[in-house]
Length: 204
Image (cartoon, rainbow, N blue to C red; front, side, top):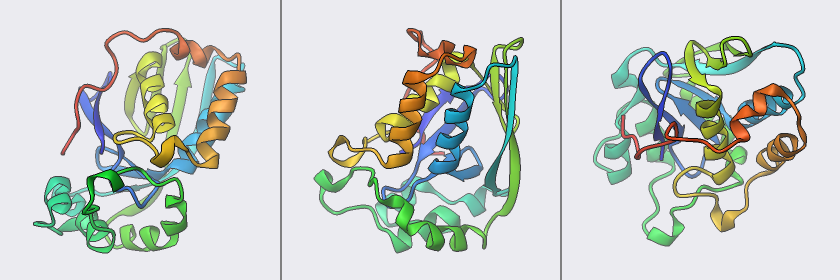
């Protein structure tokens, strides 16, 4: 489930996994695969300049109705939009104990990418980490370093309800190795974080 995070530009925003069978992440109306996000974090960990900038392959869905209704899709009562299409193909598990983020979600990427291409426009969004601003910007949505760190921690955990068997995929393990080994200023968010973290599941 996506959770609610505090941004510096858009107030409270939704970020996270939205279906246990895919490694696609959403940030409001933008979607990108976990491997792209984790790769960028790994590169940030090696950054030494005051500014880091890179592109991230993403899909943007402009109309809210084309995004879909997550809670309706989970309940099986609404399959409109992209999210509805995902849940039509990969329904919410019948057994509560099966509600765990699957580390093999990347296997479904070709099918998920073909589906989202029907609803969204594909684009490269800019991800910028700026020491002077003390901020990380993802396609125009800004976060403090601590707030961005919460996004990283979310992906490390597998969000809510966490990775199945607490076993993240290889891309997440590699990201956390880079985080733990890095000495970049960007890693200021690894210090104790105050109240900038997730507050509750987001159903937007």
